[in-house]
View (cartoon, rainbow, N blue to C red):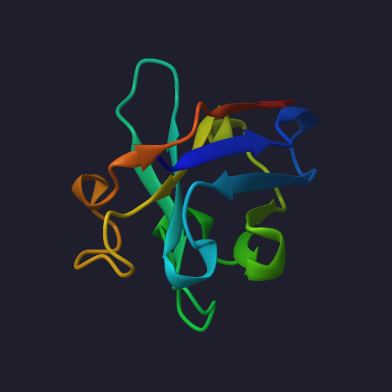
Amino acid sequence: QVQLVESGGGLVQAGGSLRLSCAASGRTFGYYAMAWFRQAPGREREFVAAISWSGGSTYYADFVKGRFTISRDNAKNTVYLQMNSLKLEDTAVYYCVTPKSPSPRLWRSIDEYPYWGQGTQVTVSS
């Protein structure tokens, strides 16, 4: 089975930065798209960013454009989310996800991603 393990979350002040990592195992990582979703307290899970298998195409939610960067290192079976200029509203549990097939039909749709990690908490303080 596919296993995804997130790390790098923590407490950071507004305006600061964090780099999340997701280590994958269970299949050939380099041939599958990866994405990040997040869930804030009392809210539904929402799309954050996605990246194609080669890293050549990336997709971002409007609220993180210019602040977050998704990248991957296929040799290390790892995907990253560099988060800069963090805001209070970025506080959430961040999940690493991957689709059933190598490339999802709808990159921003939660229904495209059946495999999820356990999540890592990101808390932004004033």
